[in-house]
Image 1 (tube, rainbow over the protein chains, first blue to last red):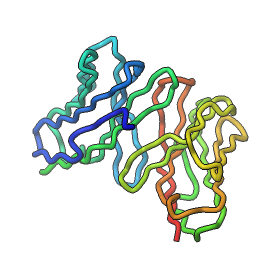
Image 2 (image 1 turned 30 degrees about the vertical axis):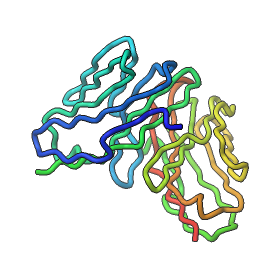
Image 3 (image 1 turned 180 degrees about the vertical axis):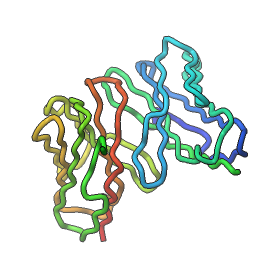
Image 4 (image 1 turned 60 degrees about the vertical axis):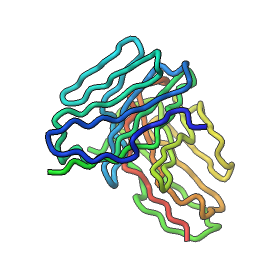
Length: 111
Length: 113
């Protein structure tokens, strides 16, 4: 049973555009929602994270929007750059302290 | 300095062999993890240790045995390797046991022939 559903599977955006990746979760016990960025041959790296007491968190060009009632959260990448091309994973963590990952989104930003 | 380092980076071996992967972190963290990333890039936790104590043990075949000699090291030994074990194995660490930022190594790509 996949507890965190991520979409789209792949995304192509032009340089300067906005990249949007969505995730939905089922378990209401989740209370920590990080996003990880992974480049080929590298391990995932934490990009930004949010907890359910806020609806939005922004760090530079990266913003997480969180909708607790809909059990959804999304990553927005403003002014997308070719260097942002990577695989992005959403994840959710709860009281059992395990992170459950989405299946990933391969983002390609064309110059 | 590499924060979370894994060795080896690549491991190619025959089915039935036994192999180990080592992980070390120099971040002073007290919690370490092993993840498996399959060919479709799906990441799944396998084990977690906090202060050398096993706290997460997912449904993993008992051919996989983690070992934490101290807080900075977490090794993974795999017996009787099978074709389905081919994957990238990631070590990670965090400060504190809970939903804290995790720092990942660059992975060990295991290929079973």
